[in-house]
Length: 480
Image (cartoon, rainbow, N blue to C red; front, side, top):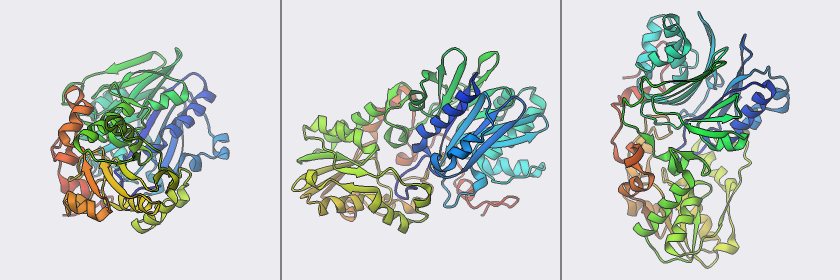
């Protein structure tokens, strides 16, 4: 269900270089299922048979897009990339689904991206002035055009990617598919995760999260380094580190708080364990007497367990989440989202009645979800509800591929903590501190982007340009 009251990440990517066409199709399909939490608006896969690239994509969940008939008619290949998509736009065009396939002077390639560029409009205008014709106008299309142009002079696709990195600014983890090779690239700040894995001796895989490797039987090798370009072909694995170490790392902190699955490992840290540590910290920073601790599924559960362990207050499963909501039932506006919440979450009354409840959630954006859940808990007989949030208050927009693109929609932009507490109907409200979450997630070790909390952006951003790109029409100047 598209969530109008959560920070959602923009995409997940996957790539595989194997030696068995049937296995490549099967594993690519399973990988998209394992990444479904990163994108529920669209899904796609592209396969290279060494002569051509065949792409299959549409809007919807993986199960909606890749039906039995679609899978039966796929033209397989030994190399493939996959993508699941969310979007910051209210309306997503079908042709904006990824991967994107581009035919150009040197052949054909496919590209899938996770992230967002902060200089996308400038690059697009430059390419348009040179004769480029855009359809979707997405960042992925802009990067694909840029790489295609550089490929003419660079001599190889991987060199074209390295050269394109000199011009693109922002957050990105990309996979590219050539007729004979797989390429993976991570931006120099490492803002989006990307990992490398292996199956046996001949099959290499890359994915946004390590939980994908567990699902397809791959062995985790290592994280792709910030700024690294990896190329895999018949001669094996190659790496270009031209852009490594040029920038301070700035991994999005919400990968640990909310985006990633708890069974993933990012930069050597278990997502589940980080969330538990945040929960322990919450118990120290915002203690309260209560009878039970419960987490909002799914990302609030690990933090709730940590709070319970640190406080000695029993943990209980109080909220049941309906995960079987198809694309046809994804709400298109805030009002339909409110109605869908009634179907998405329900309360175990026997666990809650007569209890003082500590409710752990990962964030408050508009307050809609918090108000709804607290109302459910009170109707189920909770005598008190104390809300604890496993991230600091969000005050600033994100320019790097999440859905925090409107400061005016943030409840923190118009209310103080005490007012938010009253608005959502809680007896008390506490957010984890910025200093605390840095200590838990290991900012000193790997470098974290916390700009949505602090306003300390890892690069210079033209706010007008970034937000106008959501209304930008191909061939027109951005709005003033």
